[in-house]
Picture: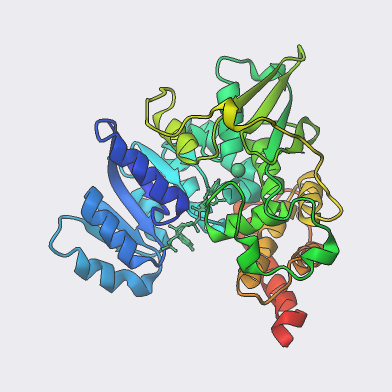
Length: 389
Ligand code: NDP
Ligand code: MG
């Protein structure tokens, strides 16, 4: 029986993780749940899964959650700091990091500090501070198991393999809803359109990142740290059907891939049950439904966020942290129709130019760079044509 702390339980990953838990009550028990501001869903989940504790990080929602759960033996905590405590409890065997954005960094580090196994969905944690996170995980013997489908695919391909034998990894990308589109079309697209992902149903932020290809750039940086790769060992290929979830090429030229229907429940379940596989009733992949699996090169000129992320990966230091912060701000503004689709890349690029570069940042430096980048990106977003008119 594994006792889980599910951080971000009200999100797309969090709710699917709870589906996995509910299907296997003999294997998993919920010890902690956390949400930011969705009090209603957190209350409902707490009633169903009976955790020992819940954390609500938006403090204005604390009273609502506290009073709703008053008749149950469930501890209720508020604020981001509380996350760092609960993940370190002896009663927690494993932490699922499914908070979105930089906000997930500290609780992930706290879990690692306590030597907990972490199932990590929150890719921004590795984008921002991958070197520190992986170093700490090594020191504390804390295993990080990827939840992101591409990284889960690579992880599955590497079972039983020698890491030294990896020649390169190839991350697949669906291309998102605007695959094949050019700037003259993209200039006018709105959030409602960008939110229509062809293959995956996900939270709003990552759905926009998939439409701009920033998601694939973040995933390259995530792969670099997770698997200890050099930049030139990481490639991206567009594969619109999202059946091959990623590939590993070895030094003997053999290529391994992991395939399946696009359903996050599988990588979530694998991360929770690893090293075991467990049976389930998920829909099966059938070649008869897919006459063709196709591959093409990304259009780096049109989807500039991918090129910016690759530059930031090469530049290293605090550059990926700045890229991530600027991206979080402009995506938030785009979701409110306050900046245009193509403007997002311009604003991220300008923010990268303006924040001073730090070659070997400490955790405090990352926090400062994140804050500085947010101020600059917010200012740029405020001056967007869309915000003004
Ligand atoms: P969602 O937006 O659906 O959910 C985010 C979760 O984080 C919610 O529980 C939310 O609480 C909580 N949250 C939001 N802001 C804060 C904050 N400031 N402090 C604490 N908690 C917060 O996101 P997803 O589930 O889509 O994504 C989660 C992570 O997983 C992301 O890093 C994403 O990149 C990654 N991922 C997601 C995939 C997917 O299919 N969705 C696939 C691969 C990776 P509330 O609901 O109360 O706001
Ligand atoms: Mg992914």
